[in-house]
Structures are given as C-alpha cells and as structure tokens.
Length: 566
Image 1 (cartoon, helix red, strand yellow):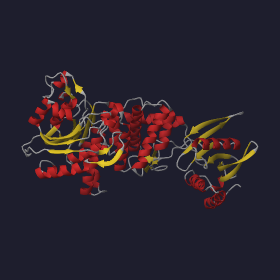
Image 2 (cartoon, one colour; image 1 turned 90 degrees about the vertical axis):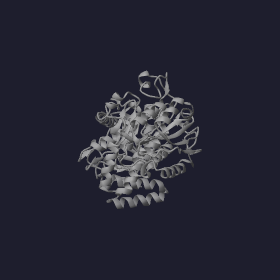
Image 3 (tube, helix red, strand yellow; image 1 turned 90 degrees about the horizontal axis):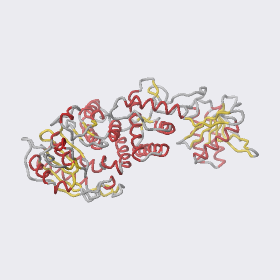
C-alpha cells in the first residue's frame, strides 16, 4: 500500500500508522527521520515523496521504503531510499536494484546515522553506478556544497570525547583500509588531514563554503580534488614540516574522511574534549618505532601537576614528540585562569591566546612526529607556532637561529630519548657531561641542555633511566655541582613497555640554583607501583601518581622553593 500525504504531518502520520501495523518499529524511526530530512533540509515538497512503493522485480513485487519524485506529479522517480536493512552493503544493493527497476537516478541507503548514495547513469543497454557524496537538493540536481560560514548549514561541535575518539578511530581505519598503509604511515596522513581541516575552519571567510566537506551530489573526484587543494594551501603555512605530498593515492580515502568530518567544527569543540580524544588517538597509535615520541597521558599529567605551571611561566619541551607535555600544560594553566578570570570572560580569552602563542615552546627533531604535535596544538588554541624542527642538542649558534636562547624558560617538561647514545664530537664537546667521552646517553645531555635553557630558579621535570641516575658518574657529578635535586619518583619497570621501552625509569625533578632559592638537602622520594595502565597499555583503576602529586605539593609548601610557596 503506497503512502502519500499532502503535508509533512499527514505523510508522517500515515507512515507511522502503516509501519506500526507492519511491525517495523525500529525501521519506522529511521523512515520518519529521513522523510523529515528530505523536506526540511533538502527542500523536497511532501507531495513529491511516497513510502512503501511497490516495485516490480522480475516475477515478484517488492517494496521500496521511500521514493522521491522529480516533481509533484509523481511521474518520474528521482531517488529511491532503503531504510530497513541494517547492513550497508546489502541495503545499498537493494536500493540500487529498486532504483534501476523504477528508472531513478539516485539510490540511497541509510540507518539514520550513516548513509551511502550512488548516482546511476543509464545507457541504451545497461547502467553505470557512481558513488557520490549525497542526494541532490530539490530543484537543483547539480553539485552544491552544504556547510559554510554564515551560508548554508553551520558546522556543529563534537558533543563529547567518546564521539571524538570514535571519529578519530574511523579516520585512521579509513586510511589504513583504503590506502593499505601501516599504522605509523596512516597516523602521519591523519595528522595532515586534521591540520588541513582546522586550517579550513580558520581561513574560510564570511558567506563562504568550507572546503573540507562532501556536499550534495558530488563525485569522489570532486571532493578529493578540493581536499588536495586545501592541503596544498594549508601546508604553505608550515612548509618545513608538512610535505607537498599528502601521501594519499586513492581519492576514496579523502572522500570518506570529508564525508565523516565535514559537518563538525573542530575549532568550536570544547578544548578538554579535543585534548582528551586526540591524546587517546596518539596513545593508541604510538607503538613500536613511534613509541619513543610519546609519554603516556597519566605520567604526562602527573609531571605537569608537579611542575605546577602558571600563566606567567614560559614552558619548553626540548624533545616534544607529539606534544603531550605542551598540551597538558596549556590545559593546566587554562584551569587556573578560569578560576581567576571566569569561564566566558574576555580577559580569559585574551590571556589564553597569549599563553598559547608566546609562552609554550617545543623542539622536535623529526618533522613527521612534529606534524602530530602541531595538529594536536592547533586543535587546542593554536599554540603550534613555537614548535621548532631542530635538534635541541645542536650548538647554540644554530638554536639561536630558531629564536631560542639560554635562560629563556621557567619550566622544562620532557621525556628525552631513553637508551640512545650521542656520538657526534661536535655535540659532545659542548657539554660537561659529554666532553672528552666517546659517547654519552642522549638523556643525560638533554638534562644539561635543559638547565642551560632554564632561568635561575627554574624547574625541570624529566623522565630519566635508573641506570643514568645510579651508574653514570659524569652525570651524577654534574647534578651535584649544577642543580638542586628536588625529587625522584620511581616508576614501574614496565611503565613504558607498551610504547617499546623496557628500562627502569624515574621522574627526576631538579631546580637551577638561584640566590633567591633556599638550599636544602631534603629530596622528595616516592615510588609508584601502579600508573593507571598495564603492560599492554590498557587502562586500569590503580594509579599511585595522584597521591604522590599531593604529597609532593606538601613537600614544596614545607620547603618553599617553587611556585606560590616561595
């Protein structure tokens, strides 16, 4: 029985009634939602739409869920929509078969959340199916963009971190499955596309459409070409970091990701949601060769809380990897500033901009890893402009060319490469801990360089191997003569095992001497048996770090050498 209605309300009531009689309760919800969308978003007149339309299929008669006609006369079928099949592949195949039987140009499958559309071109003896972005708007059967800045449909923020995590996983899966890329290769492409998406949101003018989207009735090539041009424009902002080649060979990859992310505003999504979700994405992908560039967020968070940065502190990570310390520092300072200025105040926005742009710095030697850091930071108030592609152990003449100076920073937060040795004579001879030696642990040199970066009285919180702290005589002597050791927190042997490292590590807290800083032999000592994840990287409830941070704060307050306690 065909269902028709002269108005949207009448059409929906009739669909509701017949669907209930047929016992298709779940499918009814999708049908009604789709009919409302056809009228309210796509502009079709209710009298152009029919539901439960009989379709002759060989000797049997089937039923198309929804048919949209070219006009209100209902003589020429335009779109066939399948809503009952939960399986995308089967549902779309069914919609295409019904569309071909009726002579319709478009076939669509939807389950209410996801959808696929095919454009059907007819020849004398056969037909050709072409995947496209969406069905056309009413009275405009050509291509048209959907989302714009003050035009078309507005972008919407992502609701919560779980939704963002799913989106990021889907993006990564698309790249891996379509491009057949290894984990770390897919990760690089995802970082570049996130960067291009945020660039698009930032630079699209008023009354202009965004580029990063799949519009109405667009082909795969249409969408992919536009995304490639967008990336080409975006990378010119950071030409030394983002390569010319996006490294996407299949247009379908870009089409699928644009369709997935196009409706969302990454800029307007809450900062905490973006930060948690993107760090989760990094966490789940930082394995094997990339593990050295990542610090688990539980450890990162604890180290930032130990450093206790404020809005006037200048912060550096000289081995910033994917930018975790920088990101969590920004979050931490933001929470302090919200309490001071108020959540929606102009003063908060102005000061947060200043902190993000002028007070948070990172140095990373690998351009590919820096892409992830920049994508992470551009998602979080655009503090990426101070991430430098350089070797933090290079001679000072080279570092100064990047605007980096001695005694420039108040806080150093870092996890330098563990287990790697520096053998370059030009680098070794700069350092007390390296001069005259055939080689030295890179992590040791990073500590000495970190103290050079620090202002007098500045604090460095770093990951160090237990071997370096106990057996490296040159390093131990250097610390005794040039720094106050304020704390050592022992981490579980397997703390970095999920990320490819298996050495016993500690959090080392040192301070650069200053006449204003009290000299004391007291050292904060603690041991964390559990840090919130197991040896596989799976999250667990046991985490000793929050309690250790609380005890550290009591220690700082008692001695009065850092932060508000001074």
